[in-house]
Length: 322
Picture 1 (cartoon, rainbow, N blue to C red):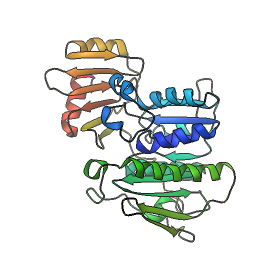
Picture 2 (picture 1 turned 60 degrees about the vertical axis):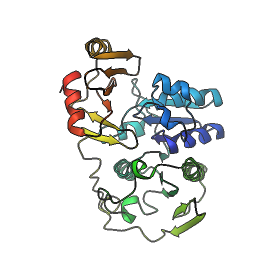
Picture 3 (picture 1 turned 90 degrees about the horizontal axis):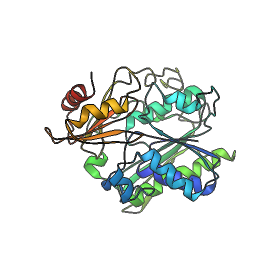
């Protein structure tokens, strides 16, 4: 199984799947653990936050102590158009592959979900959508060539400011746990070959309202993804910046993917502020700007203390390179 995102949804999903004894779980997340995560991200603790451990790694370490029979594959990556199909196939250095049979959505933004939808439909792999903001959530299983896909129901990405985000509305931990639990049930049905309802389930937990709407018959021949097979999100460039929800931080993806020399980066940053280096990242508190810079081996970086992409790109170019 491929889990994309290991935050409020993903940690509950991973925990329940590991305890249920799923055979293999590939966990992908781009971020590190912070103290503000702990009220809703159930696999992490204060020691993970103090160490700034990547979420995928911290999750795998915890899950291995819960059920050592599960094969865990942590990937400290930003899932994007350039790597999602490779992660789905599970290509190893020896050339062997272990293809995921279900994709679980633990992400925190709409664009990643549309990307998952593209990859799942193209490769014919079922996936389970889940979203949670504030005290509300919704869940839907998508079976390529059988049920409507995400773009059959929601043809376009929401416009900026159209929906609440975790920055504006927060996330109530019980609401996230409810979404994730429903996702796990749907994934189990898929794994066991049981019928999966074609429906969108939504709820507002604070008021106790739960609603399921049938999506049977909603599959569209003119759907850009499953009808015309126009995979626009898979074909987009993966380079650029992304403001991280609830983090006061911006992620920078370089135009060219290249493995960085961690020792060289650490040495360069040492003059700029207090620097720490692990096998997974190099982290520096920049004295001059007061910002935090975390650089990953694939060239990706997270600049903490700003939501301005221009500032983030400037910091990246100055300390990492254009």
